[in-house]
Each structure stands twice: as C-alpha cells, then as structure tokens.
Amino acid sequence: MSGATVLAVGAVSAFGTGEAAFAVDRAGQAARVAIEVDELFAQRGFAHPVAARVTATLVPADDRATALLAFALEQCQSRLDEVRPNWRQCRVGLAIGTSSGAMLTAEKLFAARACGEPITERLARGATYFAPLEAATAAMSVTFSPRVLLLGACASSTLALGLALRWLTLGRCDIAFAGGFDAISEFVASGFEALRATTATRPRPFRLQRDGMALGEGAGVVALELAGARAPSLDFPLLVGFAATTDAVHLTAPDRTGDGLARAANRALSDARLAPSSMGIVSAHATATPFNDAAEAQAMRTVFGDAGPYVVHPFKAQIGHTLGAAGVLESLALLDALRQGIAPAAAGEGAMDPACAVPLLGVSRPAPPAPALKLSSAFGGANAALVFAPRADAAAPTPARLVYLHAVQTNQGALDAREFAERFGERHPNLPRLDRLARLALAAVDRLAAAIGADALVGGGLILGHTLATLEQNDLFDARRRERGPRSVEPRRFPATSPNAAAGECAIAFRLTGPTFAVGGSLHGGLEALAVARDLVAAGDAETMLVVAADLSGPVSMALLEAAGAPPIAEGACAALLTASPTLGSARSTRTGVELHREVPRALEADSDWIWSGPAGHAELATYLRRLST
Image (cartoon, rainbow, N blue to C red; front, side, top):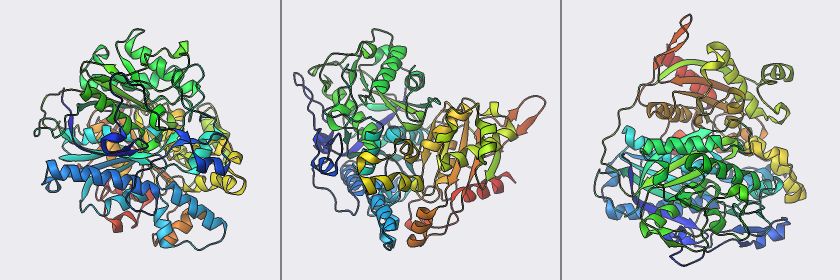
C-alpha cells in the first residue's frame, strides 16, 4: 500500500477557518450544528430558508466563491511555505472541484442581459465556472501543471483528491494542491428546493423523519505529496485509495440498489489493498433525502455486510451541503477524527429508519486508529470513494500504462427529433427531458459508437469538456426566479444546469459505469478532458474512456465571449475513444490505436491569455486528435 501525505491544509466553513472549519467534536460531546434560519433566504421568499453561511472575514473579491477559494488557497500556501520553503521549485499540480463556480456573478450577468444593460469585460470574465479558479490563483506566482477544474457536481472535490493522488503516483507532478469550493446562491437554492431536496428545519440523515439537506458554503484545499518522499509535515493519516464509478440509471436520483456507490467503495478499498472489515469510520454523503440515504445505506450493507465494525459520520448535517467543497471538508473532518482517536457524533434527531440502519453516535467517543472510507455521490450518477490510513509504504511513482486513441467523430448539431427518437428511444428512459447540450454530446458519442461498435463503450467512463459549460441552460432556468421568485422556478430545468448532466445522460444511454464527470478550467475544456481521461486509463482506473467536448452557441455565450474579448465558439461536439489496448475489435475487424503523447500541449496551463484564447472548444479537440491520428 502506498499513498499521499498531507503537507498543508487551508479551509473555511460555517464552523470557522483553518482546522476549526472541519474539527470534529471531542469525546463525550454531541455534534455541533451551524445550520440556522437564513435571513436573506427568508426575505427572498424561500419555503425552506435554512442554510449554513460562512461568517469569517474573507479575502476581498468580486465574487464570494472566489473569496472562499482564495482564502483556502492562501492558507494552504502559507502553511506549505513553512514546511516546504522551496516547494515552488517543484512541479506543482492543481485539481479543484466546484458545483456552481461563479454562480453569484452569473446571476448578475443574466439579469444585466435581461434588462438590456451593457456587459462589461469584468462581468463577462467573472461569470464563468472557471472564473474563481482563475482569479484565486492569479496572485500565487505558481505555474500549475497539470491544472484541472472538476465539474462533477457534489462529488467534485472527492474526485479532485483522487485525481491528485493519481498524478502523484504517475509522476505527473511532485506536489498537488487539491480541493473544492462553492458559495451559497439563490440560483442553486431555488433549484434544490424545487426538487424537494431541502429541509424545512435541520437535516436528519438516515432517520425516519428526514426531509432533505440544508445548503452550506465553504472551501478546502490540501497540498499532497507521495508518502515517504520526505517526513510528513502534518500528523494527518494518508490518502491511500481512490475509485470513481457511475450509476448510469438516472440523472438526479440514485440507483436504489446502491450498486454504483458500492462498486466505488470496493474498488477504492482494493486500490488501497485493505479489507472492508479494517475500516473504522465511514464519512457518508448523507444528504438526508429519502432515496439517497436509503441507497447509500444499501451500498454500505453491500460492502460491509449487516454488521460492519464501523461508525458513520454525516458531516453535512453539521455544516450544510457545501456542494463542490463537500468531499474535501468531509474528508478533513474524517482525518481529524482519525488523528484525534475519535469516533465522531452524528447530528440529527429522531428514530432511525430501519431501511437505513447505519451506526450513528449520539456523542463522540474514543476510538483506536484505523483506516477510513469517504463516500460521495452526485448529479449525473457520479460516485467517488477515498480511503485513508494511518500509515503507508514509501513508494516511487508508478509507471503509467500506455494509452491509445482509436477513433474520433464530430457533429455540428444534434439529431432532429425523429432521428433522436429512432436512435435513443430504447436506450434512454426520458428523451423529452434532454437539453441541447446533452443531445449534442449524445449525437457525437452515437456517431462514434456506429463507427467502432457500441459494445466497445459499455462499462467504460466518460470525461466531458466544456468551454462555457451550461450557461445557456442556466439563464433559461434563472429567468423564472428573477421574474417571479424562488418558488416559481421549473424543476425540470434545474438538472440540466449541472455541468455534469450531459455526461450522465451519455452514461445512461451507452451503459457507461466507469469514471464519468465533466471538466472545464478554461475555454479549452476539450483538451482538459483528454488529459484527464488519458491519466485515468494510464493509472488503471478504466480500460476504456470516452472523451467528449461539447459546446452550445446561444445568446448568453455569444454575449459573454464578445464582452470578454474572446473568440466565438461554434456549436457542436467531438467524441473520441481511449483504451489501454493497442487494438480494438473482433477477429474479423480489428482497429489499431495511436499512442497518445505523455502531455497534451498547453491543455492545463494557468496563464490568463491562454485561458481566454482561441482556437478552443470541441473544434480544437477534433483538430488536435486528427493531427495526432495522421
């Protein structure tokens, strides 16, 4: 077993800053709760005006999400300066996750367009999903490579930690910053309330009277290095295992069997070479919604049996659902419990649901050190799991497997309604629900499947790269909120506002059960997706991975790009297949792949001129891959 050690931490939540942001309660104490009635939400007319906002003084920034991320990054960087003064001379990677990006600024952009007000360059550049990452890293004087913004909804920062572990073991970088962020916004709050996923009081995970989650906000960043590279700088346990899977069942509801999450947990345990019975604590996703808690409990029964020797920690019930920051803040709480020798208490009241019979503690109690498991799930059916252990063997970087490109297909538009029904009527349960971005991605994957055989895709994963993600759908959803208030939004439009949605729809249609999520840290999200998919195949997380770049061209994106001084982006999509095998097909028809280069040119750089420059989008990915193929 090898893994990564935590060198430094930066964090902020409704509990406070630094270690206070994720500290668990000491032995004999009940779980503290920072969730309360939110005055702003009450004034705006929300039916369930409860949340957990950060009250700490933040780094000044135009956008609150930027301020949260900048605070965590600065804190982590300052600590790293103390323990590794020469760290900037190393190769440094950056994997950051978010669910809503700069949504607060995007709300202003949508409102300005609706009122016919001019859109300034500052507003345009500040309204993208990647704007907080660009702004928060601008003052760090560090060239991050690789650099990825993970848009895996509520599993984003769990995926970010896992990807950082892979980079270290593959030798992509020497030190990796990883984590996530999100701020509370009316846009997101109205969407979750419309889906009936929010509580009217406080969350009660795994209990009979549970009625939903409460939103929180925050950010967390850790600096990681391979275990044994030097003496550890903090006494946190090590990150030793990771896995990602996809349900491929429904866009917003979990697979009620818990199969996808159980597969992620078992694969992460296998990656760590640890048995389920060795786990001391499970940090649960625990949204306190009826179906999600039941599915997660079923997944835990699949992994541990009916009498697993573990304690479950539902940290969202204390600091709220912090979306893109949830995975990292919950992991840090788990690590704090392990290093303090504490089995942490669970917040929530009422009788346990017999269908969710997981072990929860009323008060924290002493516990011997033991490995632990972190679970996350998200829109799009994405699942991720991490394993932490008190110790690990020193390890050199693992040789990367060779990765091969087998086929590339593009399309400049989605199939018309008749063609779409013919192609996907039996493969997707709800065609009328599909939005334009999902239809573009599905059409590109369908063309690829027609060329190589759909069976070659089954069981694999997919990384979706964007330029401007879902801003067009976001504006459509937000219009009703602006005009009529938060209780008037359309529930059917909210799922498509997740940048991970189109990836999840492809997973359903093509039975993709491997790692499936979106990325987009610049206008060059297609190349970013290629680099991430390549690394997941190289590390053994999947035998086959689809790479999809999809772009919408509409009034919001055109106005934003023009105001930002960036080139226009054509509508369309590109799909490609990567595998660990140089050949693909049957004995009668065999396709030989092209070996991918170790690096994707400039795909993951942090320079602002590059972030906003052209060419970009799906056309850029198609051009690069076809040049490579020939």
